[in-house]
Length: 108
Image 1 (cartoon, rainbow, N blue to C red):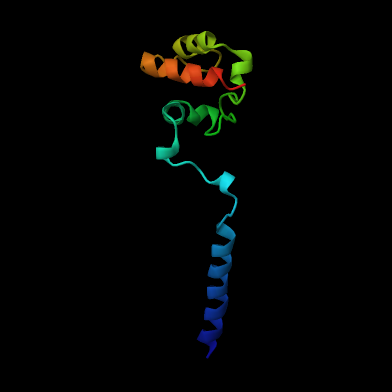
Image 2: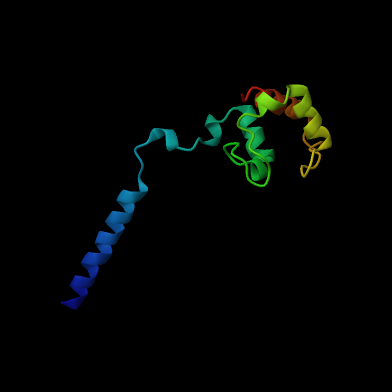
């Protein structure tokens, strides 16, 4: 008899946790790899560790509005040579750096 009373709170807890974990807000749904543009994929693969998955910053500065401060050419120069605490990103193929710089320079 006592075991039955123990099951009810446990089942209730699982139901409550399941209800809390679902979200109806579609804007919070993370993009899958298939939904990311080529530039977003490059950013996620090479930059997001320091600059955040949503360009919000972290170890490195936020890049959400980097295009207000730097041109494409300036961003390319920073990626090539590094700046401040950011090391050179010259290991990224030049074509990919070009794509990233164009994409980032449009973040205004």
